[in-house]
Length: 297
Image 1 (tube, one colour):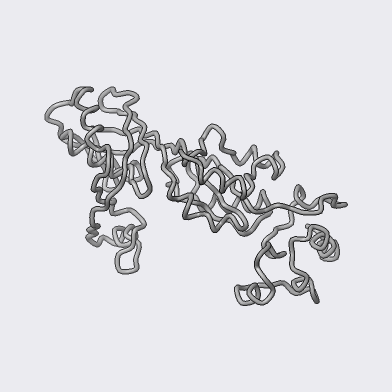
Image 2 (cartoon, rainbow, N blue to C red; image 1 turned 135 degrees about the vertical axis):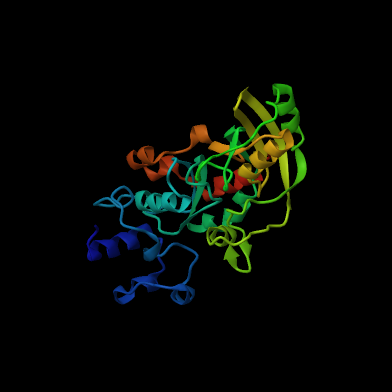
């Protein structure tokens, strides 16, 4: 923890805080204060003390906190929890992710920091690539393994060619009914909360874009395939509809987000790597982030 007097000297040196926020030791604490003191740059309340970004005897004259991080979210962590530990590691409080990834899934999660949080919607609009593992002999009320598997009576096991044809039938602009366990709101309430209360949830179909479904392997009852899709596509709903088209079950058992636009899982940062690295290693500056957003995917 940097002593208060040292912190005051630190923030004067890095030049990232408007002079008014240093007066009388008072910090802007809410939106109204920020409006009075200015919000073009991060204030002291936006930067958490961190030994890597604020060592004793500061040598740097500026700290660039405006950018994005391609994080490799592990299985079991919520997207919000990932943002929490990214804040602690980077020392940047103003952070948010660009698209939720379920706790049971892993892979690319874009975390935006500083002024780059204004780019969240643009990152959410980028196409995504998912690797899916599913079983076709069972289902569940959530169409994934978060809930108990329910056996499905199968009249005939589909052939590989039938599976490929069924996957191809979901390519293009399609109408997809979101699962009841989604976060879409009904009357101001998230659908999943209503579903957990035992209430009947009916969501309207929505148009989504699927660019490709590529079968990787099929050995009854397990199927593995990659999906390249647009925003708003629910993979568990795709599994549900694939099973219905084949006359079998459909239950998601594994999901990895391989890419969001040009950001690939091979280049994503794990928590362990970030803890051992400098901010300049993992933070993509906002100018570069804007260039990547504008580049064709």
